[in-house]
Amino acid sequence: MPRPRLTAPERFWSGWFDVVPAYRLATLRVLLAVITLVFHVPKFNRMIADYTASSFHVPPAFSWIPVLSPAGGMALMLAQDVAAWGLLLGWAPRLCAWLLAGAGFYVMSLDPEFFAHNAHFHLTLLALIGCSADRVSLRRLLAEDDAGSRCPAWPERLVGIQLAIVFFYAAVDKILSPYWGLSGASLAAQHLSTRGPAFDRLQRMNEAALPVLAGALSVVTIVLEGFVAAAFLIRALRPIGIVVTALFVLYLEFVLKPGAFAWDVLAALLVFVPAGDRAWQVAYDPACRTCRGNRALLSPLDWLRRLRWTPMEDATSSAARGELELVSPWGRVRSGFDALRVLPIALPGPFLLALIVARFGGGFLAARGYGAWDDLPFLMLLGWLTLWVPGLARVLGQPIYTTVSRAWDNWATAARPGGGADGSVRCSHTRGIRVGDASA
Amino acid sequence: MVDTAGSRVQGWRRYAALAFIGAWLGVQLAVPLVQKLGVDPFAPRYRYARYSWAMFSRPVPRFEVSIFRTRGAGEREPVPGIERYVRGYRSPAPMPMIAIYSSDEEVLDRFTRLVSTLARERHDGYAYVASIRWTAKHSGASDSVEIRADAAP
Image 1: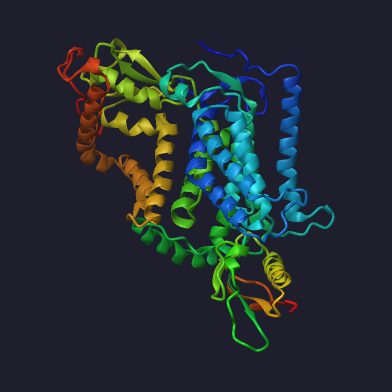
Image 2: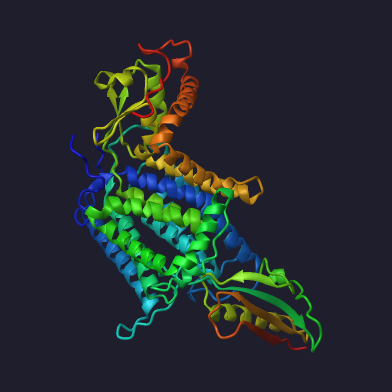
C-alpha cells in the first residue's frame, strides 16, 4: 500500500479556497471550547468580578475603551459562559467564538495585569475558529458517522501560519533579548512552578541543570523555535516539526511552567493531521456482538473520521478470533494489545481531550487539597508511552488488554440491549475480545 | 457522500475572505515587530512588549508592596476600606506580587495613581504611602521605592 502523506491539506500555499474535510476544525473547536470552559472563562470572569468590585482602576490600554460597570460585568460573564457552551455544542459557533475572543481582548485591555501570553494565544485561536464554516456540531461529531462534511481550507491554513508566526517571534525575541542569546540568563533565573510529587524530582533536576547549561539551552531553544516556525510552513519538515513541537510544549507544561499554552498548541496541531480519509481500517462483522461493541465505542471517538469499518471476510485470523484489529494507513496490521495502544494515534482528538480534562480537572482537585491530582495527565501520558516500551509491552500487554477488553465487553453489553450477555445476537466465534500476543 | 454545498467561497465572499486573510496576516506580522523594535526602521531598538509573543523573554521581577497611611512621623496605619479600592489588596501588611507582564514604570505608575486617588478622596490630612521593595530579578537602579501622596486636611 502506498504511504499516504501525513499532512493535509495537500497544497499549503495554494488552494486556500478549496474545500477540505470539516472535521479538523470541528475537533479543534471542541478542544478549544473545553479549554475555554475549564480555564479561560473562569479566569476572565474572576478578573471581571475583581475589576467591577474595585473603585480604583488604571487607564485602559486604549482610551476609547468603555470602562466596565457592575451590570455590564455581570452581562459579560453570563455571555462568556453561554458562548463557551455554544462553542462546545456547535450552536452558532462562529458568533460564540468571536464573542469570546472579543470579550477576552476587551478584558485584557482594561488592565495590563489582566494580560497573559497564553490567553493572547488562546483568544487568537478562538478568533480563527470564528472564521470556520465547518457546520459540524458536537452532536454530529459524536453521533453521526458521516465523513462528507467539507469547509473552506483558509481558516485552518491561517491557524497553521499563526503557529509559525508565534514560534518565529518567540525565537526572534530570544535572539534580541539580553536575557537569552548566548547567555541564557533568563533560563538560569527560572523559578519553576511546583507540581505534584511525580514531577518534583524531574523539576528539581531541571532546576539544577538550568543554571549550568543555560547558555547552551538558550541557543537550543532559539534554534528549536526557529525550526518549528519553519516546519509549519515547509511541507517536507512538517511531520518532524509536529513531533518536535509536541515534545517541546509538553516539556514546558510538565517540567517548566504549566499553563494553557501547551494544550492550545497541541490542539492547534490538529490542523496538520489527515481527516475524513477513512485510512485506518477496522475489521467488522455486523453479526458479531464484540465487533458491534467496538464500533459503538470507537465510532463516537472518531472525530477526524479516520476509521473505516471493513467487512470481516477481509480481515485476518486475529479478527476472526474476536480481537480488535486495525490496519494502519501504511498497511501494517495491528491486533489485540497492539491495536489498543495505537488507538490514541488514530483518534488524537478524544485522547487530547482526555489529557486536557485530566490536566485542568486534576489541577482543580489538587488546588482544593484532594491530593496530587496534578500528576494525572503526566501519568496518563507516561502510562501510554510505557505501552510502547518493547520489554514492558511483553509483560504488561496481556493483563492490560484482558482488563480493557473485559471492561469494554461489559460496557458494550450494557450499552445495547440487543446484544445481551445471553449472546442473543452473537458472532460465530467466541464471546469477547481475545488476548493477542502483546509482542506482536 | 461529500457535502460541499455552501462550502465553496465564491463571489463577494471570496473577496471578503481575501481581505480578511490579508488584514489578519498583516496585523499578525507587523504588530509584534513594531512592538519589539519600534516604528523607526533605521533605528530599531529591542524592548520587551506585550502582544509580541515574547514568552519567557525576561526573568519575572518580583516585589512586595505595602500600602499604608501615616501622619507626621507616626506609625504605619492601615488604609480603611482598601479592599473597596482594589479587591484583594490589604493594608498595611506587605503583599508579594510579580510584574510578569509589566514594566517597572507601569508598576510605579499603578501605585502612584492608587495613593493619589486615596489622598484625593479621603481629605483626612494623612500621607498615603505605597512602599515597594523589589525582591527578585529586578534590573532597575533601586531595590526599594516609596511613593507618597499627602491628603489635604
